[in-house]
Amino acid sequence: MSRNYEYIISSLPAISQDWKYRDNASFDTWTGWIKSQLDDADIHIVDLLLDGFRDENLNLEFYKSALNHGNGFIRNYFTFDLNVRNTKARFLNKAFGRKAEEDTINLPTGEFPEEARLEGILASDDLIERERALDGLMWEKITDLSLFNYFDLDAILAFIAKLHIIDRWFSLDEETGRDMFKSLVDEVRGTFKGVNYIAPKD
Image (tube, rainbow, N blue to C red; front, top):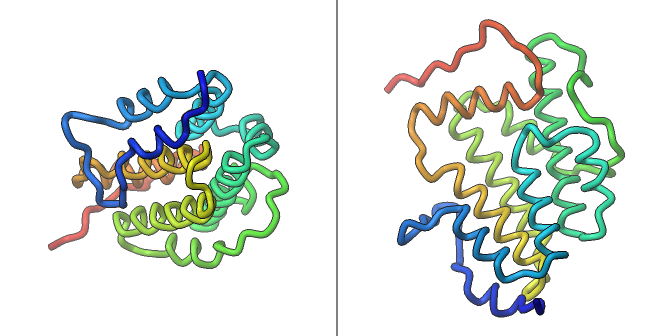
């Protein structure tokens, strides 16, 4: 199959963080259509990105592979992702009196200029706003990584990564807020007892 990136990208909707699905579409229908237009080599790269959206896959071997990948978007996206997750782990470790580097993945990632901003976001008392700010930080990074990519695979990968952020918020409610907090704790793969999400009072 030829790499008809221009056709694919011109067929994708312009999305923002508050964009909504239409006509019973979903994250899976969009990614499925995109993959149907790509050749096998590109599908493999898209699948790697999709694998990275599942916490259970994010181990040392995954990040080693991603951080050394031939595709620049994959390499840079997961470098940033690892820096974010390690910073989250250190934040929670400090809060719960654990060793600073426990449950982090120690790989060379270079400078992380967003670290101070991320730590400020994590210190927020509003769990929902915290998650929105974290996703906003990731959205900005995705935009930066694809800034000069208009009609190539990186532009498609950026669309999928942003659509994944949108998908997280598609049906937000209080229960989702609890789930997000649990996810934040679970991300460091530790067992913390006595931690409960309490919804803010009106």
